[in-house]
Image (cartoon, rainbow, N blue to C red; front, top):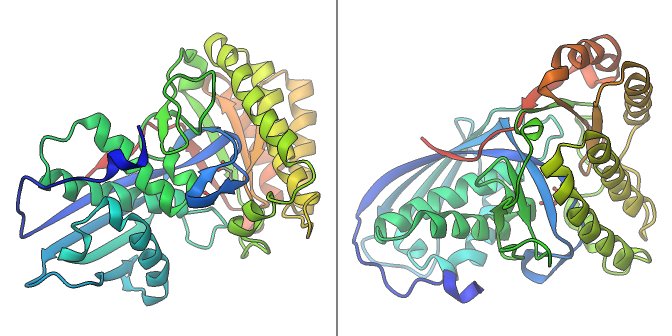
Length: 360
Ligand code: PMV
């Protein structure tokens, strides 16, 4: 598929008003996306676990304007309060997607959004927020074009979400989602995420992710700037190549359930992401002393307990602790006993693999 396939030629229905609502999850990348080309095209493919508890709910009310105008008309409410400061980000998103959603300027819109996790937790909410909004917009488009297939609906939702925030492309469907062109993954695309198309061992179907909130403050460097710094990065090409190779290796790991090999890739990906930050110009550090304390404790515990707990990081100081269902009690006890002390105000979020966005 190409971008042009997402431009509708006509709408078969006319709708005057309505209301739609979607709940979309966050996701945690196993192979990381870091570096992009124009229009949120990723510099390398990535794969993520879809989360369950960390999610955004969005309600979109729409009413046809008396006459179509040449501007967007929308209100934005976040957690029950009108939020004008979020509007420029949404306006930029609407500018990017208008070509693919020509109905947008024909309606007055009200967007009401809320997160299941604290806004100031340092957890990126852009993936779940952008996917929830994209799904609501697709729901309106489906009412205008009821013959749309479910496959197309999901693909275009992911395509639109990507234009809001790259990683949001991975927050539509499935427990394991791949986004970005990868030679050895059939159907993979830079334009949208797909459900991982190959065999996945049962051990990866019930995985836990306990998110340790190490630093809830505003990040010193935004992910937008971080992506940009990959343009002149001395190690960029090798890094992009490595991501392709890691995805290839994961194919047999996902199929066999080999947790030792899974851990090697996932932890290396997390540290490589941060290594790219440490070696960019300007260089920066998003990890905190407690991030390293936690990593070292996870390594020591894994060594003596013979469990398969591991960590990953996103673009911040928080640590995602990953472990299989069969080791839940032992690892959870360890988190309580040894890791929670390193969290800001003792805060953490218990999440697990989820199965994608839901219409409400
Ligand atoms: O979606 P963005 O532009 O916020 O980038 C997210 C990048 C990472 O979270 C660091 C990695 C990833 O693949 O999700």
